Image 1 (cartoon, rainbow, N blue to C red):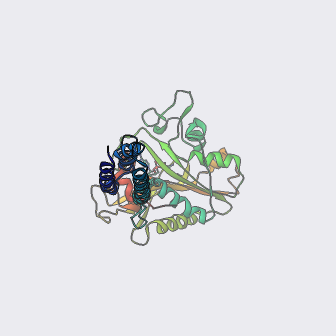
Image 2 (image 1 turned 30 degrees about the horizontal axis):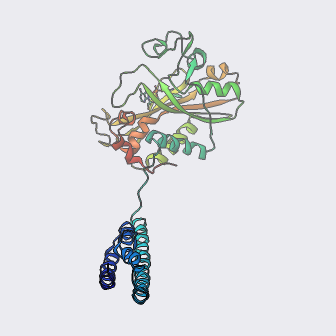
Image 3 (image 1 turned 30 degrees about the vertical axis):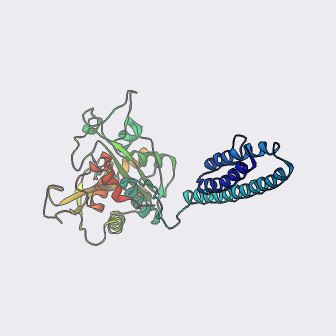
Length: 349
Ligand code: FA5
């Protein structure tokens, strides 16, 4: 290579190098450009190596030109490197950008089961009247479920046809929450004012108004001077609080071995308003049984029936929930269909 050619190469390399650097669009492309313009195999390095063979005058002149070119290329490389790093940073920031104006993703929350909501509501009405909440076992013995409740040995409820027995002799799944009346009176002296919500079991043909596993809220008040008028007033207050003034309430005589007199309470059907339809049959939906606690029951629990009187009631939670929410088939409460259950989202405590 002669000095003339060296000069030409330096000029060409300036143009080619600056354009390669300017068009490098990533740090990898820029590294490749650096090797291409200043690396050991570059034409620039060939010129440098040739300098030693030139006479001193040319060596000095072309050496200075080569140094000046290296500095120019290096500073172009540095500048491009800074620009690429800035662009990279901006790209990362853009990718990570959080748009705080986007609507949030809603968490799907669970909710209370409609029967729980209604049961809480029912219990709330009584606790506000001063009643305490009691609980009893779902597997009961014969004494608490039948005998102490004055249910005679030949009563149909005692047969395998109507009750669900467990394998331990003398025990069964309680057929009504009335068993909690006995447990309460056995362990507490009057005055007693309790409600006992819970699950009950019967061997029952399931239909729109009957399940074989259902819920009741039992009530019991034992005190001096309690009369049937107190029972009536209490149940009317309960019905008004739950159903408002639109539903008519009807009280009919009924028989339960553990009360005397006994009655049942029904409300006018929410669907037909008392004229009779497929939901209710005769225009009324029976909600509860009630009555004055039989003196024998008080005595079975060691309470002086001469001094104390009491009333009791057992309300069906599913029936109340049907009337409260206009549900025409109580099986919907236990089928677990989310479309049905979702309608109660946000209700209750
Ligand atoms: C009783 O269970 C009595 N223990 C109620 C009672 C308590 C009377 C205290 C006197 C004193 P009955 O079997 O009628 O009574 O049931 C009471 C309520 O439970 C019914 O009015 C109804 O609302 C509900 N119920 C009864 N059977 C079922 C069933 N298979 N499915 C859903 N709800 C039912």
